[in-house]
Image: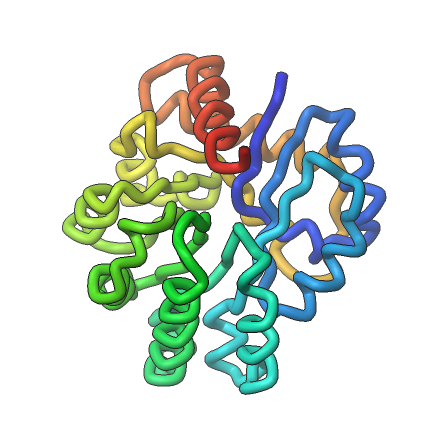
Length: 251
């Protein structure tokens, strides 16, 4: 049984290389989202030769908001962008302590999206949008991003109106167990059309996490079971659906 994790942070784990090596035998294929360009570069070397591990070039809004990302990092992103098919995670976060940095987040994201458009169509872009989906969707419309690339909203956290608007762009949505732990998240997970559904773990949760391939596989199994429950279908159907969608994006 092949399981796809379309949003994880494998590079946060202690022993990440060993986990990557074991993941192929465990039947896991993953899209690893990075939070700064230097991590993307180091991951290219770290996970080289692991054909089941794909890497995404990112600048996380938290790192923008607290100034861990500066001008040099954005310049680095722009240098790497032409050769990067997968972008993420990028986006906006207006929750709690992050909302005071909205202006900086918007400025950086607008620049990144303009760079993506200049670099040409056909990329797969993973977005973080917490209490900020309208801001993000307005920018995607303005810059014509969703029409020329495949967008993924990971762990969607917004209103029902924003959810519908995001789906209408053709965007994919990746779902994790923590999303389904809330009433709103479970309802969103149940309503995503089959052809737009992906699975994720968003794990490990932070840098230096203790993690192993058994924990990873169990989390994916739990996600598949949770999706089956909220969607009223079989676990096998969820696995087949998310696998086919993931293969299409990664191929």
